[in-house]
Length: 120
Image 1: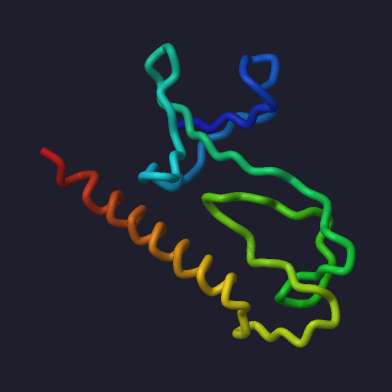
Image 2 (image 1 turned 90 degrees about the vertical axis):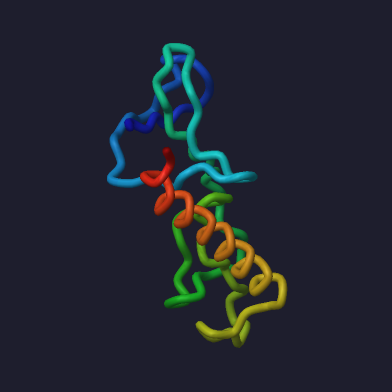
C-alpha cells in the first residue's frame, strides 16, 4: 500500500507519497499502519531528522553525518564521541540492551509476516 510522509494531518501537509517494496508489519508497541476514514490502509512511520551532536561521528568510518535520523521502528546505529576507542564490535551495555530488544521486536515482525498467510 502507498506511504504518505506528512508534516501534520490533512492533504496540505503531505510531503511525499510512494509505494514501498515492503513495510515493517505492526506489532504490539510498534504500530506501522492505520486505517483511514475512507477504509484504506496507510503506512505510518514516524521519525525525526536531528542535528548531529557536536563531537559525534558514525561508528563505521568515523565520519560526521549531515543529520541524525531518530526512528524507533528502524533505528540507526548509535553515534559515538569522536576519539572514543570504540570498535565495530564494542558496545556500551545500554547499546547492547537496545540491540537485543530491537532484535526481539524484529523476530516478532518476521513471525507476523510468516503467519499472515496462514490465518483462516
